[in-house]
Amino acid sequence: MHDHDEANGTNGKIDVPDDVQDAIRTLIRWAGDDPQREGLLDTPKRVGRAWKEYCQGYLEDPASHLSRQFEEVGGYDELVLLKDIPFQSHCEHHMAPITGKAAIAYMPRDRVVGISKLARVLHGYARRLQIQERLTAEVAKCIWDNLNPHGVAVVIEAEHGCMTGRGVRTPGVGMVTSRLFGCFLDDQRSRKEVLSLMGYG
Image (tube, rainbow, N blue to C red; front, side):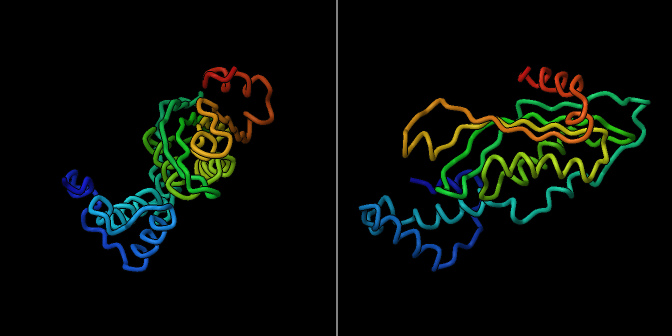
């Protein structure tokens, strides 16, 4: 059986330190299994590589994705909205998956960015240990601080593994968080319009 990381060419060269592998073996043993069992022999390396990938957001500055801005927008000054952006994060309390989608909107003042950059900002913060409330706030503030728009709106809807796989074990429950700045916070009509276009009207 091939190591999935090596088979698909991702993270095959990441060196997982011995102390990290030992910690994962300890966890396997504590959970009730034998880390020397054939099927688990390479698991410490795989898990170490996977967590380095899950948390690669610590290695980047999400704001850097907004550095290339375009001022020649043909006079366009209406809403820019990217919605249904899928993401995965991990909660800082149980390190369980947070899986969901985000809608990100801004009202440009005099400049815009490529729409893929909004998703990159989201992923930059999502690929860290998170809580959904902070993730929502960080994405919104990053766009607000770096694009100087009239307004920013971020809505995130996600399902939390710490609720579906443990504790109350209640799958199918989505948590919704939002953060608004500028015109979307101050003007009720603008707020209603952007939330409606996002699908939360």
